[in-house]
Length: 152
Length: 137
Image (cartoon, rainbow over all chains, first blue to last red; front, top):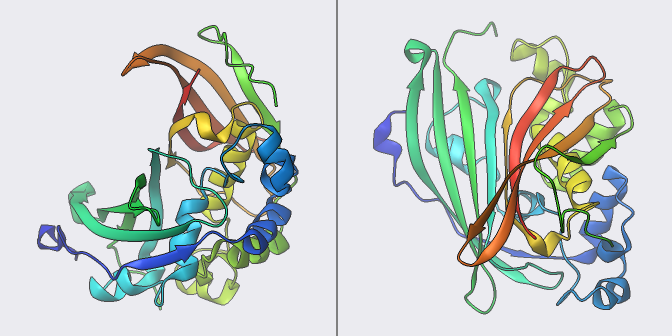
């Protein structure tokens, strides 16, 4: 069971580039048709500094560009089958646009036992900085680990 | 894009969008598009070994729907925060409706903002995601 000694554990930095081709795949999957996302000229005409990204895409960038998407689970010895996504929060400080090169640093910021130890909630905070060193966003996820026995 | 939250009234419904039924194809495409390669959502054998009857939707797929519904009415550069709790598992076949109502008007650092209460529900009305967004007016 993960305990509070994990708090402060940081994971390998992820460098991610915001690419229009990968975004198009995301938009096609979600049925997103708004021109401001799909057409740089439309974004410019609407007064955006660049082509914006959709609100949850910062989460995707870290998973796509990390060398090991399961690093956290391995580092904390968590069985993937026991994991659920409990909560997700994004705090936006400055726009992220297509072409940006982001650096994402994730750190364990909380560990809480729930239901008499049946579940462990792990808070992971990701600080996101752009190519100019601007702190553009924070992403905070709560990972739920189900500690009860599961048939295997 | 218009901005209907420019002069919102507390309690008004400003986000309201339905999405197509979630299929196995949706889950497979979202796994690739999002970089979330967790087999729980794309491999029924894995889901069964984890104690679930079948694969189920990525929570972030439904949150992406919420984000889309939200930015239909709010410019993405006006969004200050977005948060959700994944209240219940979203099953295959669910048709998600995203709704957002104005919960509060506030001012932070001289900027007028609105806090929106958000939900994503399936067609039975069961809440799958519950959350909020803060947007600059």
